[in-house]
Image 1 (tube, rainbow, N blue to C red):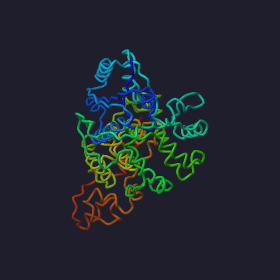
Image 2: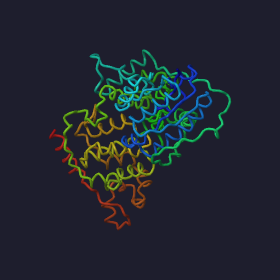
Image 3: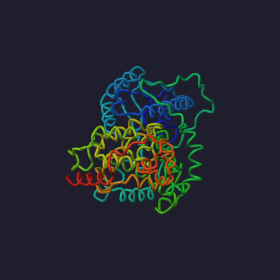
Image 4: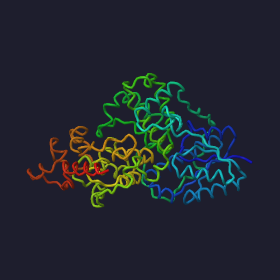
Length: 464
């Protein structure tokens, strides 16, 4: 009997322990099993589906250089995926499947069922920098506040380091592109070609970011009109770039960053630690995937926000320019600047009192970097229902946020041409200026008044 490699959310050659083991064993088949019905249930964004497809095409070529044939199989959902995998292994005379873990509960349950079916499923963890369960408090429990988790995380890295699986050496014979059939999905897709494949990012984009932007990241990352971020989140979401590789590259170049939280590069490392934090939470609290509020006092909350309010937010028609421009960015590009994600999430949950689950789902349906743990953690943070969330009385003022992070309105004008003739001074809340000066603009009136919405939100949260 023999083994096959099962490609899942690990669309890369580097730091891929299942692939390394497959090469060591002489495995010559790798499968990817698409599940359109499951993807729909999990709100996979069409642009993310296209991004995955492009990386699978690239991975098929790379695997060919190792003498591994890539085979795309199709199923409907996870239950059918198990059947397809079992039937394929039986047909090929395989009894062992090599794969890397996936953290969400549905995926964990699926793997458990596969292991019970008679197949030997060998799993490796390479989805986080430090393995889930390895960063605990003195009582042996998961931290429920980020800062002590971060400090314990750093201490552990200082003690044991970060270990990546070495990239295997491929054949020098170039694969024949024409001999490998392109991957096709029976699932809606939107063009993702403005995002290069991961090998280009690793070879060109990240080195430029590290050289020219990293030390200024803390100062520039909150300004959406500045391209001050690394843009790696879509690659992490599909496993096209390893988080361990990223952290190791940073620490090797800036070894003092894990000892000095005032270091210029620490803010970027801190984002990777936040990613680990949310994934470790998912490991310890798997019910988060079932929609549970981390703070259980909100579990039965009756959010009064209307469908009309949600639709105005989703279409970028709230009357608050920074909110509307951010939502337009999401709708037009499949991505949103991180500072703006906090602003629009706070607006939906606190100004409009719409259930955060609706915003969470909308983001997943549109984001190229949609990732359950980070998305869930971010929405629960904004709604003050989550682990180490912002206090319920912290309510972002979208006007002052706009003035602070888009002072000249460059980002607003890019996505709201309706406001192109409004001066900088008034761009953040232009209604009075438009009315007094007879400016020709199709911009709409605000759907809520900030002070009243704030008082309403405080009353709502105090009731719990």
